[in-house]
Length: 233
Ligand SMILES: C[S@@+](CC[C@H](N)C(=O)[O-])C[C@H]1O[C@@H](n2cnc3c(N)ncnc32)[C@H](O)[C@@H]1O
Image (cartoon, rainbow, N blue to C red; front, side, top):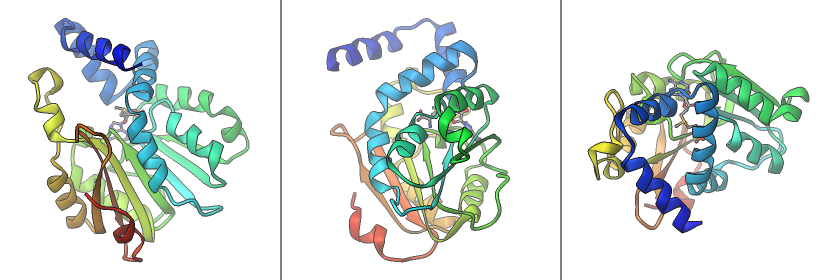
């Protein structure tokens, strides 16, 4: 498995420009067959981020959880298999809505999961609707990160939890080939500052991998002590 991952990474770094252009669009807004392929690859590469998010998602019965930028819906599926909660998702890609709905057909049919197309910067949910909002590998694409964070906090209940899984700026800065115009990369400090400036409290960052490229930021809308006790950098 490790060797295969290494080979894929090497291929990614030596891919021609047109393929890299395809990757840029497919990470930011996956569409069609290519989108299906790339989101599947993300499921393989990012399993450590998924595990970290799982650990920090509250496990209380009947709570409402939102996935911002759900892609092919793999994380929602993992959570749905383990938790008795109500799941919601918002993603800008119509094709991802179709794919994630197919991948979570039972939960959608049972009205345990509600998927929509939309932008994190303008979400169609009432104030204080969610117990938890999480997002995996999407923060780089937020055009107005302040507005996105405001929206996230708005839809969270008081005491609700925000979880943001991401690769640090250091990961992207290893090579220009990892960087794409129009995307914003964050150090752990920068993302913490952004979260704190937009209404999140007790913001902590947990390192996820040995190389210290993957992180999980956790914060809450109003202090209840849980995050501070369980997370350290
Ligand atoms: C790199 S993919 C990650 C998908 C999924 N979270 C995962 O980890 O497998 C980024 C996802 O965020 C979505 N996205 C990008 N910008 C968004 C925005 N402004 N609002 C909502 N979703 C967005 C994309 O359509 C895409 O599905």
